[in-house]
Amino acid sequence: MTTTAVRPTPAAPRAPTFQRYGRMLGRYLRPQWRAALALALLLLGSIGLQLLVPQILRRFIDAASASAAGGAGIDATMVADPVWWAPGGLAGLALLFLVVALLTQLLGAGATYAGAAVGWTATNALRGDLARHCLGLDLGFHKTRTAGEMIERIDGDVTALSDFFAQFSVRVLGGMLLLVGILTVLWIENLWIGAALTLFTLLELAVLARTREVAVPATTLEREANAKVFGFIEERLAGIEDVRANGGGPHALHRFLTPVRTFFFDTRRAWMLRSVVWLSSYGLFVLGSLVTLGASIHLVTIGAITLGTGYMVFQYMIMLQAPIEQITQQMQQLQRAGASIGRVDELFRTESALTPGAATALPSGALEVRFEGVRFSYADAAPDTPPILDGVELRLAPGRVLGLLGRTGSGKTTLTRLLFRFYDPNEGAVRLGGVATTDVDLAELRARVGMVTQDVQLFQASVRENLTFFDRGVPDARVLAVLHEVGLGDWLAHLPDGLDTFVKAGGGNLSAGEAQLLAFARVFLKDPGLVILDEPSSRLDPATERHLERCVDRLLRGRTAIIIAHRLETIERADEVMILDAGCVAEHGPRARLAADPTSRYARLLAAGRGVDTDHPDLLELA
Figure (cartoon, rainbow, N blue to C red):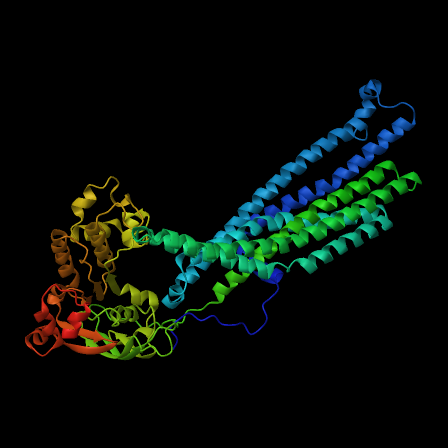
């Protein structure tokens, strides 16, 4: 059994960008079909009015030319003539043009707004699904990626898609409809003109089709380089105090140049390749405009078409530029979005190494803990590296407290990770309450196991949300009862907004003791059958530590517990002691018996001095 997330390679070749984007577009736009329908109506109305404008201008120019040819010209007398203001008169046509132009702009603005709303709603749903999927992957996946990289993958890539989602329907679909409308009108007007501009449009679209995928690989490298820059920044910001205190600033800046240099060159190359689409399209359009203008002048000169018709044809040619440029720009965006789609697809295809648990329920109350010949190594370990856990055997009866000792790297933390099923063992089995952890639903398993560590993770959220992990189903009465039980009743009474008081990220506005007690309150709310304590009082002053010890006594009552100890005083409440050494159980037995046996490792640790750090190499040599 593997221990990291696997990335299966699809048997079939990956679908082209348009197909993959179409599937994604359909999946996330389908729930918004009403908004999409309103968007379609706005688009159709706007396109219909755009097609009407050149027709109005043609009639106006032909009417004005006819008046001028008759020798009357256009003077104040004609403007005062009621016929001039009739629907077919010059003033009526001018007024109609202004009204249609205004309505076109209003409908276009409405379509743009609706498209942006639909696009952002769709991509927010995509962002939520992607974050939920990544949170469900095993710990091995997250250990190989920095937080900054994951932020860029989940938020940065989806934001690149949201820009395209918001414009795709308005600019690409609307542009395609406008192209079809213009060409249809030209075919009706004149077969030769319609055929010529249709060939030009097909040539333009063929060039787009040939160049649309040119920059996708380079853009993928650009996105990956961007993710590495974010990851580097996140890591250095997280350790900024250590970097400054140890004079590592110049070195960190020097190291920063490597990912930034890569990002600069990858971005420049991707931009240049994306520009190929625009340059080829623009060159063809300039050529087409010159040909159309020359042909129109020639046809008007020989009397084949009227001046108004010639202007209308050239106006339609100019109008072709807008949708083709929009499509061209979106092809460039599609190349950028195509890279993001590929990376999003890659994340969605990444599967957890943890198989879904069955529906087997854990027994209520305190849980028995068993390790049966457990052997475990991390997947990224070198081939000749000894296993972290090597044949561990353990049976801890329900309601008993185990003190876990061992030097750094002996496997203490790894053992507790297997209990949460962050990983599965390579060999053997881990059982809780007689049930293998692989046979229990992950949500239920982690609801029945609680943990308090030295480093308390607090969110930029209210006290209530920090305690309930944003579960709105937990009643306030239960939260208040737990806070009083852990001794935070007076502290809560002095908060300005009670449970709604905001906590800074990392507990910046709390003392270490308050943060640790909040961590205990979380476990009380879960009411687990197994509790794991990783030396939670090591950073506290003596008075706060005594208060915390009383909370520990209440927490362990009626529950099975494993205490990872770095100080021997912590072990005094344990019923049993187990010492790990190089992944093996070096000693295990009742604490009182081992303490009374002068030949035991535990007794030699006690003799070496209480309160001494058991991770100290010299002390463990004595053991």
